[in-house]
Image (cartoon, rainbow, N blue to C red):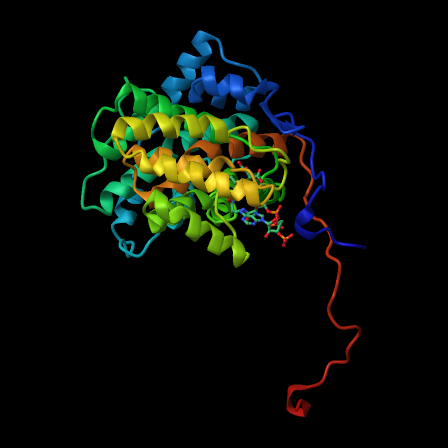
Length: 372
Ligand SMILES: CC(=O)SCCNC(=O)CCNC(=O)[C@H](O)C(C)(C)COP(=O)(O)OP(=O)(O)OC[C@H]1O[C@@H](n2cnc3c(N)ncnc32)[C@H](O)[C@@H]1OP(=O)(O)O
Ligand SMILES: O=C([O-])CC(=O)C(=O)O
């Protein structure tokens, strides 16, 4: 038995949800460029869960179900107030809160298909409420209930800020949600599938996935990119900052990808949005620093920017706190996790690979009093 480091190149499951073939990403056969330019996030949720785009009635029904299920149990809101609020990262809060939500869902352990679909709707609806409520509670503000007349993207910003967002903010946020929704067998999705393949429940699968997304090699990279941009501060500091990192063989966050060879097709949409938003805010330096970093990194190494790179300046330009960037990734990616969890249940087999043992050979047990 020989291990493949990081399971690179290993095909671990079949799936009909999304594909990456020759650097082209599709959701159920629809090119991500087409979806980014034309589809709303709610349409994408439906597509991932049903493997078809919704009719007008199906879309309206899904929107209604999401709106009806967005409120949170009071116990979960109260729980936020017990957290050591100034020390808790919102991803840790979200991970704990999703697990807690499961305690208040009487159907949590009901494994029939219809019940699992209802839980998918509840989780998709409640995760934005959790992220925005936590953000407000830690600032000493009251959580804001979602409005039934706003779409998913608009509601998120409304629940976060209490203000009805501008058209351009809605467009940018909706596009970001579409672009982050699913990505074949990425680390957090694989985690969710491994978890539920034991026939554990949907809440356990999503909680585990949030834990995996949190790391800076995966979803946590978007916050790390913003930290880097903030440290650099001004365009004229980019060259020396990046060259020093490259010389020290440090990773530049937001660059590289396990699967894409030529580049992540999602990055260009976020790059365009970053340029548009920074022009509107007048803080073009975030876009200028980002393009300069891209120029230097890509001329030094074959490492194009990934989805996390330009999403940082997009979210910053929308006025979002930097430690909410990765929870926002989860707000979108939960749609993909749920599609994969439902697909796993549908054709389940325990996921249990092997390990290549590298420890000592056979040893004889020595009682503790005889050990030196
Ligand atoms: C949504 C997402 O999850 S997208 C990814 C988000 N993560 C990041 O942006 C973090 C930065 N990027 C990385 O750490 C990596 O490129 C990953 C984790 C995305 C992919 O990792 P892997 O496929 O395992 O590649 P690995 O980390 O082994 O790197 C291969 C080589 O490229 C280098 N490399 C990879 N990414 C980077 C980077 N961002 N900056 C500098 N060098 C890099 C490595 O140092 C390594 O070099 P070496 O062969 O000389 O030792
Ligand atoms: O697929 C991956 O390894 C990471 C990624 O880009 C994503 O999850 O969107």
